[in-house]
Length: 352
Ligand SMILES: [Zn+2]
Image 1 (cartoon, rainbow, N blue to C red):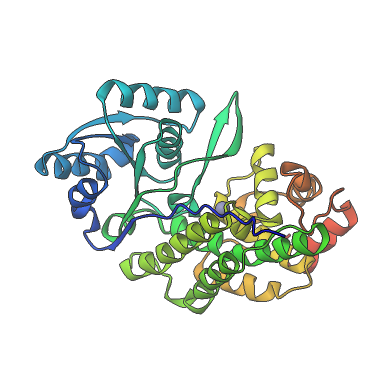
Image 2 (cartoon, rainbow, N blue to C red; image 1 turned 180 degrees about the vertical axis):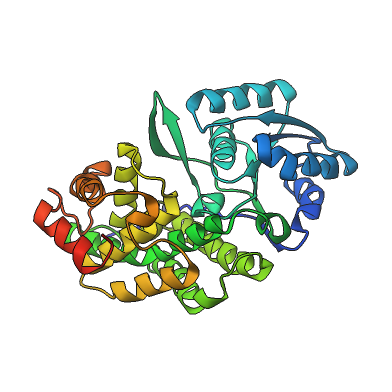
């Protein structure tokens, strides 16, 4: 048989992390393009926090910039950014914010075929360095293909000012690679799905680093931001190598998506994935205690009460989780888990 394998991996060209990293944005921009125009996509708070500063740095470097202020990651906002970018004649988009602003910028860049610079102001999930975006259309949000950042600038001095809860959630999102990998393996064994061993290894490494360094992840310490953001970058790279989010998203993410769609509780994406990881590892017969202990050490939630969910909410979410992504085979199976099994998982793991 002829060799027919073809892999396409789009990786960031520049990853700059650390204290004052944002000062490098002018140099990074010039390496990406000879064009002298850029559009900054940011929000209300993040504009004050970093948006105006980045604009100033770029303008000092001779790059004309225009800011589009957005709120939610909706298709309308993506269209608005695209229109603005075309009118301004920019060749590079710069997303500055937590999750939604970066999602809008990376989806707009993808649609326009332009480069995108990711400047996260918090590290609450692995989306800051991934080729996927969560965009809502008519009130329903879904994960769509987007542009992998051409450059990622993670300024620890800026990110450390975000509430610690965000960073803990980001660490939990990386930790959820472990159940996701087990699900991927299951998809391989039962459905013949292709597993990329390099993506697998990188994703696993990222999660293991979070476990090894859990006690070092603390509030108001730039070093902690560094520890988490590095692993977020590796998770993003693993997804790029795999060509999908398999290495970082399995049944634990389906649980989080199910809770989101029910609009219950107040858990952040990463927090719900962390709780989902305890349950998913239990279902896999794997070391869920290690996941729970790591989350506790970091200060991320391990119980439903901490994210304002009831046991009934969680049971409902677990029972419908398999439907959130029917094309992705996981430990939840094709028909989902039963009420009895869901309740037992929650009780045994101490999640409820
Ligand atoms: Zn995630």
